[in-house]
Length: 299
Image 1 (tube, rainbow, N blue to C red):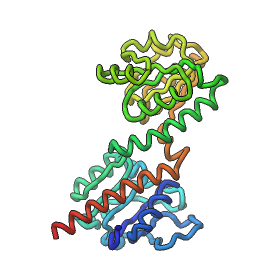
Image 2: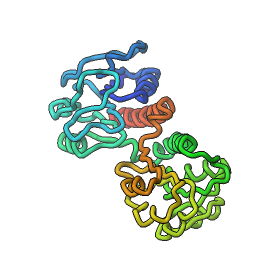
Image 3: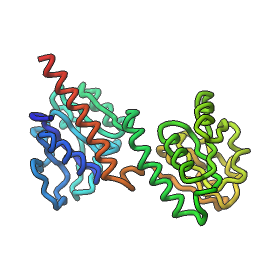
Image 4: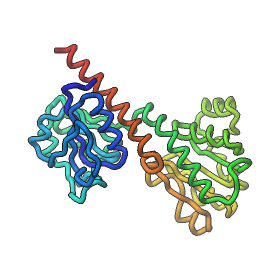
């Protein structure tokens, strides 16, 4: 339970709805900022304007997936008001407060560092990334079905990267009957891919692997699908980049070749915001429980 813990939400999207409901159910005191257009009332949740006085009582501050932009503005779809997290506001947080976000740009990282406020980037955690790989894979498969005129079953498919997303992506495609080749960079990943029934290759061999593909899913956040690689692909190929911006595909050259290429970051919040919100709510409530228990033991 989170009795006595005050959590403030500033901005966000549909994922936040699941998050603050879960925390309210655990008896946290929840305050919403930037949700004035939200029609459904939630029991135990209050709405307040953004002010230093409010944040002085916060034990946790929850920001959207990308905490702020480089000017401190906070993304919020449930209000027309522009929300900005200023230095004055961060300075008002108690020193024990924790700021949660998906990923932090330098603006937010620097503010929290300057004022010695703990910052937790949830998307950097292995557990969050693994849970999120499930809606990411489902969303990518949905895009593949929408943008091809073949079945995934029997398709010639490449997945680049055997990290947390790549592993789930490759396994899901294999389960649908695709012929899955997986591009890896490490010897242990090559061995694991072989054991799991994939057809692994080293990414240095990519140009020779793409000559007959139908689909390519990239999860490596560096430029790997270069013009030289794309030049070897058939025009029917569809490329879906799941890496964070700017991705790892030369989109300009793909367009020049007439090859369909799409950058698709943040799929969990797009295709399954309820599930994505539950994942984040579970992790935040777990972390807050651990933090409050630790403080209680120290007291």
